[in-house]
Image (cartoon, rainbow, N blue to C red; front, side):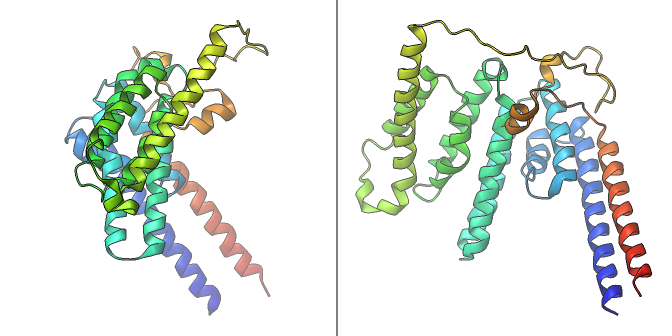
Length: 295
């Protein structure tokens, strides 16, 4: 009897995950072909990048690649995605559920970490203005309702700050300092602490990078080691776009870039779902055989 209950639970979870994958894929297709406003549904989909497992994450990763190739306003879409994730956190905070609050805030930071990975390496220069737009958009949102939303600075924004050049960091620092110049933060120390921590972090980063830049200007360093392997980007594509350049194949995850130093092949959205479904079916089949062979 317990085995049957376990099987029912596994099957129920499998059906739920498969249905969720199907919904994400269908919605992503609508966004990709411009059937719906990208800044609304696209942002809603992307806001779940790190919340529902690897199969959903893969689908969303390919959606972001498509939006970048289509020269969409990726910065505004990502800002909206971060805001949606943060709003879910605020709902958890209002419910006084500390576990849920901690979980949703961590998901918000994880989302920012994954999305900021889009701008790793050479993409930092290519998408400099987009990064600036994201940082400025997030700061504007954080200051819409102060000090309630200031934790937004401590979460998503810092991940994108690390992708900026020194002059841009200084401009952001001056902007935030100007916003709180005439504010008595002592009236609500805990409420204003996130922005004070944010400012201090920017100052430290600026000082550190400025010192590094001075050292760099005083000597010439030759990069050693074997040259980067050129990736042969062939095979399956999310959508066939023969004019697309290899520069558009930026990895979504910075950690994946550091590990492989190679770009991943794009996979059709529907292929992502079918692969996940086959894997889940295989796992269920093996578990059922295990129950059958048990004396």
